[in-house]
Length: 150
Ligand SMILES: Nc1nc2c(c(=O)[nH]1)N=C([C@H](O)[C@H](O)COP(=O)(O)OP(=O)(O)OP(=O)(O)O)CN2
Ligand SMILES: [Zn+2]
View 1 (cartoon, rainbow, N blue to C red):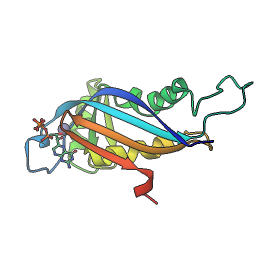
View 2: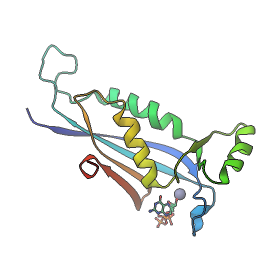
View 3: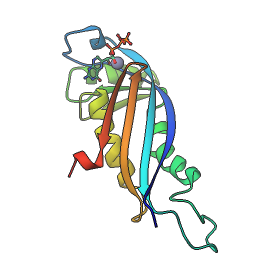
View 4: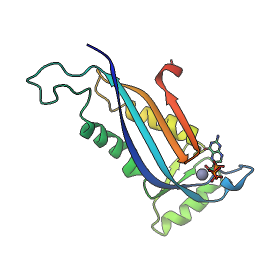
């Protein structure tokens, strides 16, 4: 049976700021992030299985990515908790804002590494994460490939 890659696309609106960065992205601002999630596996060959012909049901993939990423990051503002932004985060949290503290600089590169780990932890054994593409803007994106990462 052939290995097949399938991809599902997600969008979420997230704020962030790059502490210490030497450009405009040091300011708190936001992006309409787009995330393409590609998994690889063989389509189920058992005609009695409700998922016959599928690598993974797109609906099941959506549930994983929504729970791990979209529902967490959408309309949240992400700060690196190892910077003085933690104080701004506290102020916003106290005022009931949706703030996410992460232990990395929230660039698209670092976010896509975080997302890859979170998705891999949830995939069934037979299905592998092939790649992720995280777009910050129409012209800027970061990609994670399993083949680049051992
Ligand atoms: N390697 C990276 N560089 C930058 C990142 C990043 O995550 N990784 N992030 C930013 C900013 O957060 C933001 O994305 C600005 O990037 P930029 O592409 O410059 O945004 P523009 O709005 O100017 O996009 P244009 O399409 O070129 O108008 C900065 N760098
Ligand atoms: Zn940005």
